[in-house]
Image (cartoon, rainbow, N blue to C red; front, side, top):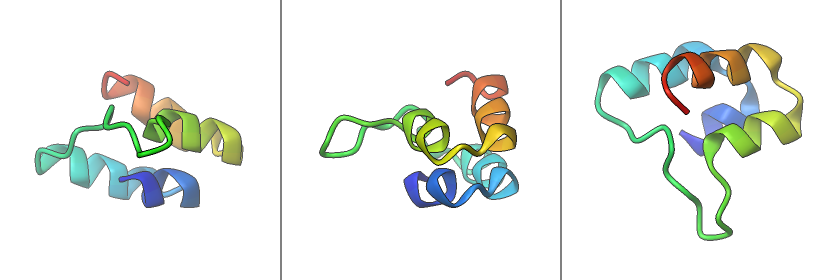
Length: 54
């Protein structure tokens, strides 16, 4: 899910979430997918993550 957030793939994030992925999972550096999407500037992905509860 972190890769999808960094790459800006909101539809992949929606799919992973529907399959039970934790959208708030922290990486080893402590970043969540929301952090990754914000840093990468992917507005649509940020909106998707927030809509899903991030």
